[in-house]
Image (cartoon, rainbow, N blue to C red):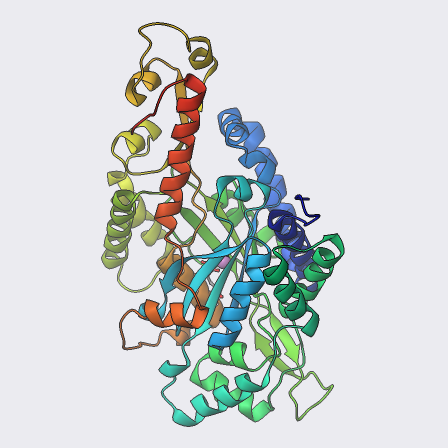
Length: 467
Ligand code: OOG
Ligand code: NI
């Protein structure tokens, strides 16, 4: 609670993330099985790798690990996206980053709503990858008009949720009762509805254009399509999934396995076939739709612009060397190529730091504290590190990767979804729909790193510390 009796947005987000997870366990029981597998694997990894457990302890990640997850939704109109931005703001989540997925054949562009300050991330790192359908890319004018008409009729927020968003904006916070009410009202927007809002024929028309279009347009709301827990060993979970009755996609997206993970590695299991009732077959539920799936991810160090461009280059080279898209047939070859290319990416924390490839958080050691009043102690960052007065841990990557996201979309949309869309970047149009610009994730990591250096300087009684 804060002063005026308001519940802090961080607390609301933590509760919402928990409520969402409980709802998704009911809706998609395989998600509960996956959570159990991830929990077991994480415990085993920490028992086997005490160094890793220690470093997670130091950064505080160990406390957030069990609660850590991201979800994804897709919306159809600018108004929906804009109200979502206001809804997420109640939970201290802001739009970070812009992802254009059209080059990969998926007609959406996206952002991630998440907390931005390291202290807030520590309370709850819950994120929601949010995509806006680009209706203007639908070639068939009749289908486009149909989609627009259907979307214009729906209201994806409850009246009470809208009232509470307004109250939050007017008064600067929500009291305990309102915050609890908000969590359950906001949850309604993300719930699965097996009643479609279209006839079977309309569904087919939308679906024939692109499976994603049917998923966004034919339902009452932007059902949460997956929730993703964070694992400490994605290769182990991927290997153990089949024995639990879960079929993973062919390849793990992102960088290859490393001693010191970077960015993000992800894998998903195929979408479920779900019964739906079309409006001309009320109560029948004899239609079917595949939309929802499960995913796991392993997070590593956030990279600087230099690190990121090295990553992009090595990833592109691996994909170019592979004839065709990564799939069942060439999964082994793809992993081999990745491993080969990424030999050029240092797998040593000191090198990553010295070469300016990743962002770090710094800590004063016991030696550093004890030497605070010594004359001739080092006062530069390299000097303090060499003398063991400071130590560092990488900042965890809190965002997403466009090539990986496209791979995740494609794995649950089916193979016929490799469309090609013309048109360049449309970030300005996205900002207009959102009603604000998105934050630059690199600036956020640089800010966190700066704050940790400033805190170390203060603890050591130094004016400042430069990289
Ligand atoms: C989002 C796919 C992207 C990720 O983790 O990269 C994603 C979607 O399918 O709506 O969730
Ligand atoms: Ni995801």
